[in-house]
Length: 363
Image (cartoon, rainbow, N blue to C red; front, side, top):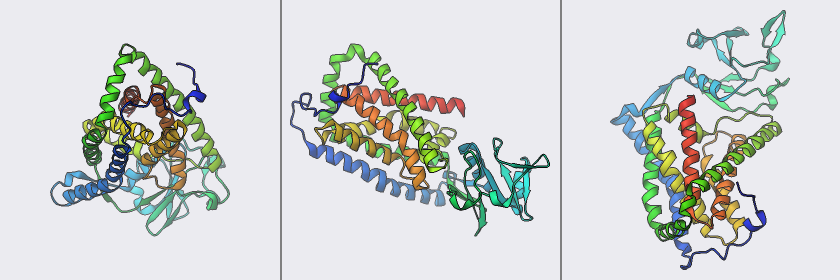
């Protein structure tokens, strides 16, 4: 991995601009269309699929039970207890449960270590309860390293409904994601075609070094992952909370375990990286000659678009970190290779491919 040269990186990039005149209108159109599809048209697609599920294709939805929700929480958190009404006790007869008062019981994640022991028995007392049962919902909060004396300082991270509900199946989520990228890909490629062709021509000059450049780029990604993990740990300590898995990541993980796995792989490994590099590197950087401004804007835009669905502001602050850091890494690679798309795009594809393979192997 070559040595970082931040002085050179954050200078104005005037020497390596394309020889053809810069048409910022194409960049603005691409960015506008991207956010139009991601924020507005995707909502119409969601409503269309929801209507189809109600009328023609009920298999697009699946029933989610209270037990399903608690299982998800156990997957997302390392240390958690959940207080439930006795009326749903039969859903948990295969788990070790603990009575709480006369009307509720407690389900505890297997790694939970914050019991108070009385006469060598694990005991949960009223001053360390982390949940309230009100209005047919159960508010859940995660324990970090110890339980506070009052629930006043605990942030609610999730609400569970007692009643079963219908939500999109993993296939429907994969289909929705795939359709969004089908709307994005051809239009953005048409908008930015002159710059794509120019980058192809310029990329031929280092064709013999493709493999080494991509491997070196992925090493930067690994370094970015280390930095992200450290920053997340610091943020969790500062906020005294434990964030859920980012919604974007959770949807991908669920989709890879369902019938829509092929659609999700195509979206996450091919269409997604190509579209995102065209927008967050080619288009956004094309609006700025100064690399510092371009990198800051593109990195935070890249982060925000991946965490729009987080359940709380704290979750957003924590879960945006890896995406912003990756935005900086990809931005650095883009500038390092003279604002050429191809190395950073292949590194992005490789990064997502390795992540997808890891999820498939682990889960």
